[in-house]
Length: 444
Image (tube, rainbow, N blue to C red):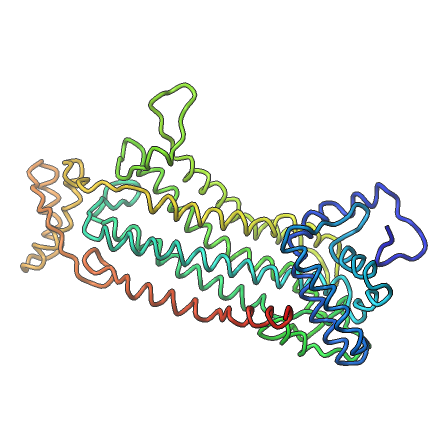
């Protein structure tokens, strides 16, 4: 099959297999975005006279047909075709002849794949935001429902002070709110148009880059064409850091849930149909779902380093090394989204124990409450501390299990309304409606 860069000689078969690698498989992630980028590009070419006004509707009609085939799952990259860009151009030329060959004017596969990656990443970040918002809402709901259910708090894995399930659930909700700030930063850095940078040094055609920026719904463009190409790898790495932040939150929640579910703690219980069993021990009900969430999220936390190791010693310009980033980056969104969705599913079904602190094991937890009570009565804090410490050592300490915390963010004042408002304020800054307007305009 002829290559876009065909120059009258064929590449050694072993070399071709090695250099193409998994590109055909990975490029299927990008197919619909390659079409959208091409639609914007040909509209721009028509505006500067490189495509005739009578030719434009013909090209757009066929591009839309390819887009719809992709949406139906009826698109594939044929054997011998190098990548998605080649496949789409081949399909065009098969349908409309030499007219299909005009669409590559003023661009390179370098900026073509860049714009594909930006559009793909933008769409995937949107899915993440939507799923995180759903998990966040479930955590806030669980926090409110269990605000008065006390549990032990730990430091050094030693019982420390009274906590509550309201605090525990709410802590992960607020963590996701902070994670959303990373996603917003990644989204903004990503949502800039690299199209028109060509191979990284621009074009002698009078391209209208602002037009393609508007057509594709980007906030702005990568103005410097060299930097547009230098952003390959950097954009993925920044996005990966935001994904790693979310993964860290989920991993910690999963670890806690595994710990609290074990018989030695017994703080939470998973429904039987949400556990797995053992082939030899009939009593086992394993929290495999949380263990796999933890493991998958830990792998996602390694993603920024993987990307860094590919790009950290590359000079300015394009290099084939960058191909390898797609293999770890593109599938990672699906993995993280699965983890978010499964975390929400299992959290909503997880049962909590309401009588944990009735166990005398946890009596020392209330010692700080007693120290504070004495200090509030005028006893110097250090004297109160020593008095209660002696009672604990003598075995004479009698806990008062009434807990009265009122300050912001404490057991009695969770501030969930403020946490929810902060999350919504961040989500509002994404302005996803611009994406919808742009895609509708291109596909109209």
